Image 1: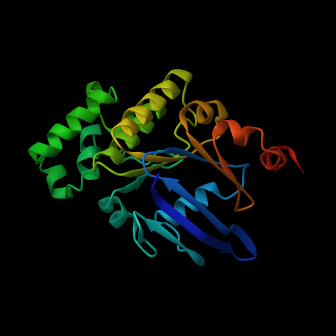
Image 2 (image 1 turned 135 degrees about the horizontal axis):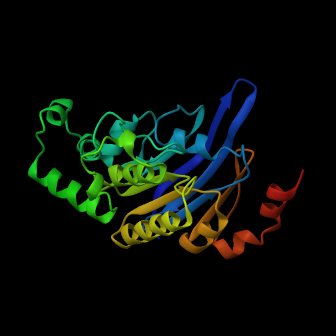
Image 3 (image 1 turned 180 degrees about the horizontal axis):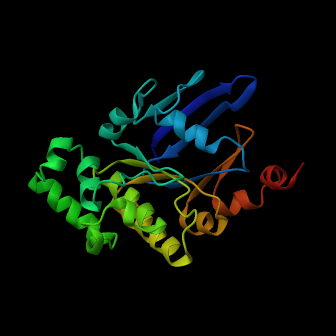
Length: 243
């Protein structure tokens, strides 16, 4: 499979702490890939570096064969690379539907003037229906439950019809039924060609949803393989269970 994302020698230091240390890996187009590792292994920092929320100290990142070094998050979103966060980022003072307008690139004038293009309106309605949020479309996002906010953020990143979605702990703090819902949406969109890179602590979720696993430890890539191969790899067991 062709690599959609290539990370080569990525390094990030915060003072004397090296959070990401010459990290390299690739994500195959059309895959559902997990990025796992013990707490403090650098997973979220890697996400922030890929998506332009932090500058790299050295190394390179390529998306679809083109360097995205120095790109801003908004520009990457328009290129087809989007992400979610550990703490769901939604606009609490906007309605659920208005959050999707903003995600589609609508102006603040279009939000407050209640003007929305026909194509965006159709797309938003489809996503609200798929994510079972139609009944709360006119509620402020601040009124949603934690799980509903996670679903809204997920729906929002799909408004632009991305090629690659980075999900940062999509199942954190949600109930088992919603975990199954998240898994179903990921599989469904992957079947349409969307590639996923997922940071996740729930190993049962990783083992049942992902087809490739990248393991980080102390900012370095220590193992890449299938879920079955990774879970029995001595390097991975040592990283999780060692001193």
